[in-house]
Image 1 (cartoon, rainbow, N blue to C red):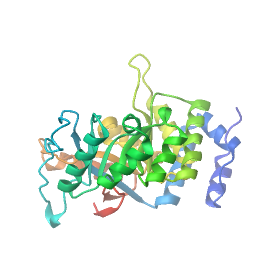
Image 2 (image 1 turned 90 degrees about the vertical axis):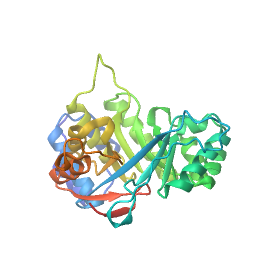
Image 3 (image 1 turned 60 degrees about the horizontal axis):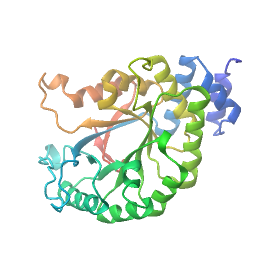
Amino acid sequence: MAAVDFDRLTEALAAGEALSASQLHALAHSRDLIGLGMLAADARTRRHGTRGTFVRVQVVDVSHVPADTGGFGLDLPQLATAEGGTFSMGELRLVGAPASLATARLMVLAAASRGGVPVSAWTVEELSALGPLADVAATLREAGLHAVASARLDRLVAADLDALASAGLPVQSVTLGTPVDGDALLDQLEALRAWQAATGVVRACAPLPVETSLEQPTTGYDDMRHVAVARLVLDNVPHIQAHWVRMGAKLSQSCLLFGADDIDAVPARDDMPHGPRRAILEEVRRNLAAASLDAVERDGAFRPRGAA
């Protein structure tokens, strides 16, 4: 394959031009990691400047909550306030598939009434199992759900996002399911871009797979290529994410160097067993600074909570 003319693509992006199908195809197959990274970082800077965001998330597993408790078995954390009177979490995230829509509604009502922060919950696939997705989404939004927590791109269809759009419920993050590369990766990303153009409900993409094989794990080289390609293809998805818990500190920092601008799932609670200098929050800030980004803490609605 012919070498990619990164200078020409940089000029095109600077002029506000959309990259052509042939240009995106060349990028998806490029092995020039440095060129891809520089182009993706430039695209990120044009969209977000030097701002890099992160969110502290309290995850609550509701799979154990009996269906007949009215949500009162929900083990929500104590929301101790930090200096300035703000909650230590920016998002409350419910996980664990509920037994029914009625149960899900009660759980969302309980979370929204006690949390005081945006509530996200479940996956598109889990919500689809509860009934017609548009009806489910509308019911949960009325109960106080701010967003669907996630969706796997390999299991997503256009009708899912259409249904969420009709209910006014966004998706916090779309992830890759299993490792793909080349044309397969490009096909999935271009499908997401087309669906986003029609609905606008996707807030972020975390472009690394949630499932990997122990026999054939992904490499850091390909992971960074995919982050960069995602930023360049998904020009209508606001944020490219790293997932702090799933990826860890080192891979999250690498993602920031290759076009990502947001760190998701920073734990809301940190007992600092190794002291304040090694606290999670300080490590997140250092990672953003190392990527030449100004750290800004946000909430689950992607609203800044002030400079970190």
